[in-house]
Length: 194
Image 1: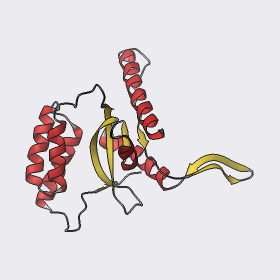
Image 2: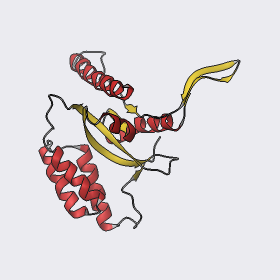
Image 3: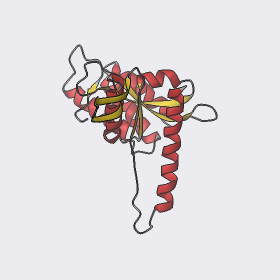
C-alpha cells in the first residue's frame, strides 16, 4: 500500500542520510545535512491548476495541508520523520511507532496524533524506555501530571538521559501542575509555527 511505501522510503532516506553525514564528518567543505518528512493520507485534488498561462502541477486538499504542517513540526519535535494518524492506522502492524504528540495545527480545529516510525516490527526490538514512555503518555492524557512526569523522567534515563520528547512532556507536566488545563482539554498542543 502507498502509506507503507512512503514510511519505508522515509526510513531508508533517514538511514542513507545518516551514512552520508558520517562519511562527510570532518571533511572540509562538507556540511552535515538534515531533512524533515511529514507523511499523511487522505483525499485530495491532483493536476494542473491555475490560469492557462501560468499552470502548475500540484496537489491540494486538507490532508495535503496537514502533511505540510506535520513536516514543519519535525523541527519543533527534533524528529526527521513524522506521520499522521491515518498513516499510523494503516501501517501500525508493519512499523513500530512512538507517539510524538497530539497536535492542533494552525488553522485546524480538530486535533490529531502524530507519530515517529522507529523501524519495522519484524525482526526489531523496541528501544529501551519505550514501554515506560507509553505508560507516561497514558498518565499525561489522563491528567495525572505528577505520575506522568515521574514516568517520563524514568523513560528519559532509560533512553540515554537526553530524550527531547520526554523532556518536552516533563516541562508540560510541570506547567499543567501549576496551571491545570480546562475541563474540556483534549490533550492536544497547539502548534504555533507552520
